[in-house]
Length: 224
Image 1 (cartoon, rainbow, N blue to C red):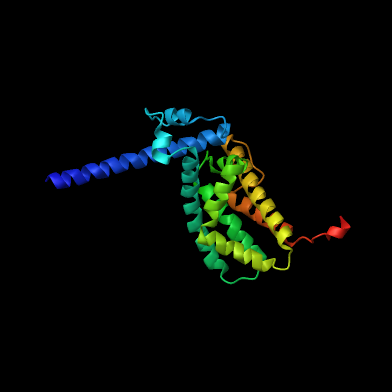
Image 2 (spheres, rainbow, N blue to C red; image 1 turned 180 degrees about the vertical axis):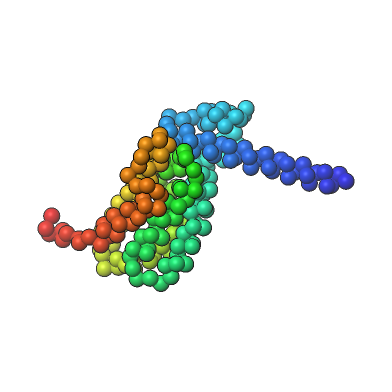
């Protein structure tokens, strides 16, 4: 009997830890999105999440960077599942639009699933504006097989583009996706009408823009 009771106790404690972690992550994401990373302290996060222990961020995530990584990981895993479906549909396509769609549409679909208001896109902007956290974000994303496969497909489609130009336009595309999604999320959160009527249409507009950018001519350096 005691063994069974102990097992039940351990499950209960594990559930409480999971609930606490989720509360801290969702609260931190909201506060970071609304106020910026530098304006929010670990104490404020803990208090807003209803945690009596103001050191809970350090205890559960070994610090602020660990907390941010955990938020990125949570959303990244969900986007990864959606991207896998799009990759299956793309197959071995040579159409750059299919591969840009694999890049953009999973992000939009995930954001659309979060309801209104959501904070993930605006949180993403805050992370991308911090040099250290931006590196963490990119590293976390690039461990995902689905994203690496998508980028390989895109590279194949623009294989004749100079490497430096390709890297530059990839950064432009990342910024465009991040900020466009954050602007839509912000508009929805304050009850305003965003430019596009749905996340799917926003993804379509982003796909148009990024395909155009990736297929635009490259001005020779001698002409600059």
